Length: 59
Length: 215
Image 1 (cartoon, each protein chain N blue to C red):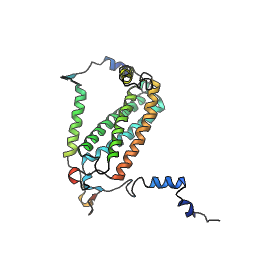
Image 2 (cartoon, rainbow over the protein chains, first blue to last red):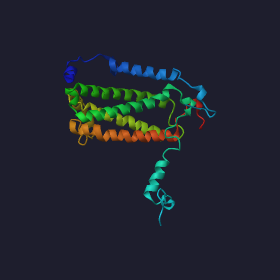
Image 3 (cartoon, each protein chain N blue to C red):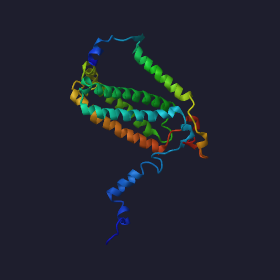
Image 4 (cartoon, rainbow over the protein chains, first blue to last red):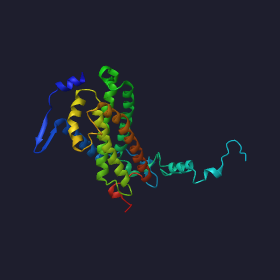
């Protein structure tokens, strides 16, 4: 039945910008991944400073 | 000459021409002692960007495990069973997460020039994994046994033929595509993943650019 439902679905929404054509769904996924990347860089990681040794290693 | 129970012959274990000895020496030298599963890391690893490699690996484990379960029921199982449909969805969404995490991992490693410090082969095996993983997912789309897979096969054959490999890799042959998907390509992904991880453990996690002390 899932195959039939795919056929019955609409063509989806697309964004056209010059030679670039991308579906809104794919663009949204890329935007979420870029956001995730930025968050991974700026959100502080829970640290355990008391576990750090003199050589700069931590658990 | 007799030996007591549990005693080993040192003469045999030291023989460099013995294949078993050489294999053992090679295996023992793959990763520095204590680095196979370390419980401590340099402090710069305490960043979320360093988590995405392990997230990718974790997703791959779920992909392979759900693929094993799907192979028990066969390619059409998910069309006729709610359990099969559920396992198929786990397989699909773990693959989506696998690629999402892998691409963020790739971005992070690219922008910190992770090939520094004799880590070029680690980078190359990562790129290889990215390419083979795309091929594995492509053959997975062709193994859905529905109209979607027929459409993708019909659209993909022209691209495959245009690069001259259609005679050997026929995307309109679902049996061939299924075997590539469940045997050949996962074997490649698994072995190169193992190689990639061994290289990471051998050379350590790459430091950030501003913490580079290796020249």
